[in-house]
Image 1 (cartoon, rainbow, N blue to C red):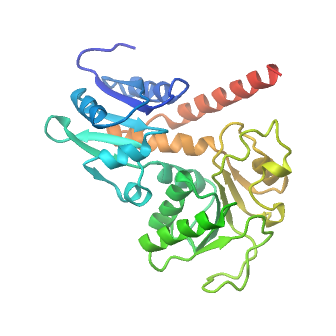
Image 2 (image 1 turned 30 degrees about the horizontal axis):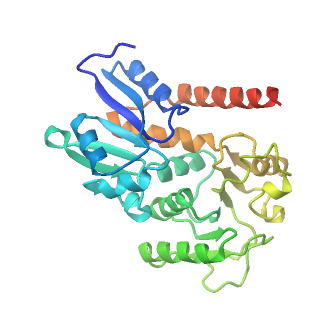
Length: 308
């Protein structure tokens, strides 16, 4: 790969980023498109006014932003998309205007997750259950309400207070939206909750956003599930955003029940697809990217098994 003085520079900003596959994916796409551009890792621990000045001085084309800098990225931007405003966090920075000194913040986590879901199911008019109330849950729930119009969304998790706060924040942004808290461990959806639009006991779509499942090799399958197994309908779509391992306890259960499943790496894939389009205005080689992600995850899982 040839890097010239004219090469447009992109990168991923976060800490740590040394294991990120983003440079591999984006540089492959640049080569495929014959673009004079390079994508580099920027491992930065601290943020502040100095970092914004440094980024502007570098004349960058754009940045992917990961943990722990997503909130900072949103707050220091000059303008932001609606999803970033709702979530208070961004995973993409675009540089434009005179001398590329204007910074726009965007969030591709929500669109990436929805794109992954829509590969296997329509969403409009469906009942969705989201497990968790963190940053990913907020981005996905907000994107569902922004673009997909599900009939109702249920939120479940271990902290009832945080769930209710999450729902209040969403209702403030989306007046008239149908959102409910679901008790942790509930085996069905309450049929007579005030305001329900559909009288179904089990959700059509389940989206798992908690860390449960990441340590599945060390945890009993039942204790690594974020919900009661009885709530899975045979025709449900089950999406676990945990991507390593690919087969989490929830995905394993869903496959056993003959549910449609969406693997976590799909969200990783499509959020990067959106970023590349925003950076370049072009389509990346999605199939090649997917193969790279699958091979990397399988290699890591094989290495983990051999290390035992």
